Length: 458
Image (cartoon, rainbow, N blue to C red; front, side, top):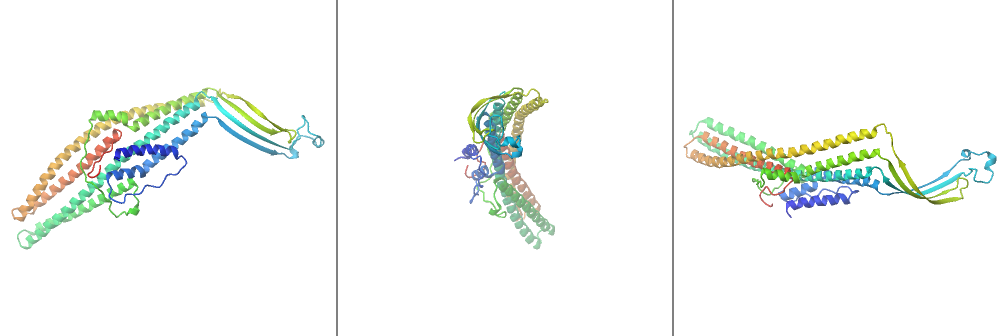
């Protein structure tokens, strides 16, 4: 199954999971990879275990629960109540002589009573306040679902960049190690030359200093590798049981990705596919329904009810009274101290805020894509230049070493060629990583797209 299909499958399963497991606790994290990490395995693990994504999923579930609560106001409410009372003689408003007389319709002498009632109540009219509130929370539920999709796409982009970062840092470390080995050979050769009196002593010191600098650079690169791996672990929730000192196994090599869209195509796709843009539109819709719900408080509230009850007589507990009753109840709040007016003003401001945020996000998407495309062109040019520079520097280094072995040049040209080659190789790796990172941000900015950026399995 391709990674794109896995993402779509994940989103669908997440929605079904949230709908059917409202009272269940989150399950344990999925098992970690016991072999080499490919980009596909990393994305699959992140989509299942990333804490931000799990939190977004649970937030969607929470909104579903709230919507169920609100929607219940539109449905009939069935209530059952029962009570039994026992009163002290001192609470019966009769004289002592009256208490000894038989009960009649004008005397209240029952010292105990019971009452049981089954009531069905239905909201008939409240100015469509309950309906608007239900629609408001349906829009909020849609917003949380779209926010979950946004987090999923952002997680994919972050995992892709973290995966590339580990490959970049490891490639850089491998080149630093080769540099240390090459400089060690230069030092050994220079020491022999100096002992034979063919080169001055300062060249030996210079070569040894360059070796120590290379070892320091290698140590710094090892630190960068450890940081990149630790960030990868955090994104995928890889426990320390795997071993913080044990290196993760990665499959693939860092390579530049391709960008298939023009700026205009990406902008058009973003306006349609961005889940956060759709979430902002859902937020605006929720604010509109909230405003309508606030205005409904100016209208009366009418409820209908039907009930069946059984109770004892007020005068004789042994006499049971039972039967049906029904009717309607209305309540109209004529003056509430301007509470409704204040609520409407607050909801009007909330609607305006949602409109501003939606409009702002639309402008941000266009501006962000322009910046990203300009940055991608810059890194593409840098990558092409660094590739040519790395090739030329590598050839120059080979020739410089050969000439030094023949005694035609001294140490300085070799060290200069070594430094130039290292700068070009490191610059090429950095340019490839930054170019791929920009491509990942572009894909996130247009609504998410998943395809392989490393060698190996797609």
